[in-house]
Image 1 (cartoon, rainbow, N blue to C red):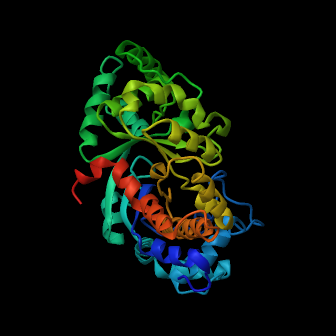
Image 2 (cartoon, rainbow, N blue to C red):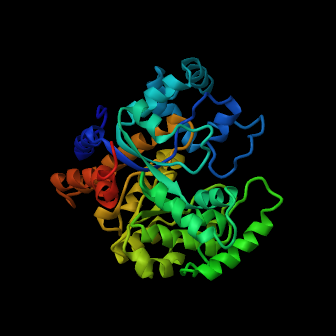
Image 3 (cartoon, rainbow, N blue to C red):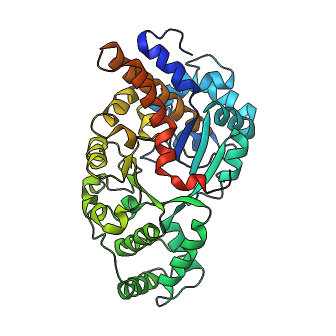
Length: 391
């Protein structure tokens, strides 16, 4: 793989390729083959509407990166024509596509968010079997709250019902995740509500949900309740930060707005993982330096920035203590993205750290050690519950 690479970057690329990653935040792969239109939509994170007929969804940094790096996994030449890529992918079938890409990603542990698109995405067990690695569950707090409502809780029983469900699900989970960024933004009161406030807020939510088939939690105080309850159980807390689809108000997702939550004594006792972070990766680095329990990654954006992802990875290594930076792909759906996130991240780390070595700013031995830290060791430290769960 290091053919054509020079200097320390070539040595570090070999190191990166040999490191089995911990993908600390990811979603399942597609169970069945997508239509070409659905596949195209998966290449745009922000606009999820079908592309107009005159628009080629491969005409993006992500699209070019797929053609460069994923095409050989399908038996094609690099930079394959989009039509040839799609034809080869469809001919293999989704089971074989998943096997190829998930195996080629060389991931030892997938930490899988199971609260989104469960009907069409593979579960953690299937991810593990297909890839030959291990997988653990990350429970989504808003999804649990909505399940409590669907199962018939009343305002007076909601708090205890949520606690009971969360405690039960936490027995097989390595972390809890909140999509507060999507549902309310961070510029809200995230202090801990008491049970009386939870009852009052849930009563309002139940009334608003009477005429909907799928109750959707958007009340920031009820979301805060879930976060604090998860912290009480000692669960690591994952928080979506930054880049997402257009349902999200990006300007309200600056992680600096989380300062009060991070200062809460209960939350300060558990790891808080800031996911994705783009374009707030520097703010996230500041928080990782300022709070001993805060970690970050730049997953998701690595894929979407494609050839520009090296600069993003470099920024993630600026201010944050290096034992606070983790790898994730945040791939969701097409397993091309699970592989591509790993490939682009390995390339970027080799280039960035190799540049430090060639400039005589770092020793090669230190660069190798930091690469292994970010690839897997930091995640294994942050998610102590990984050792408690069955492999």
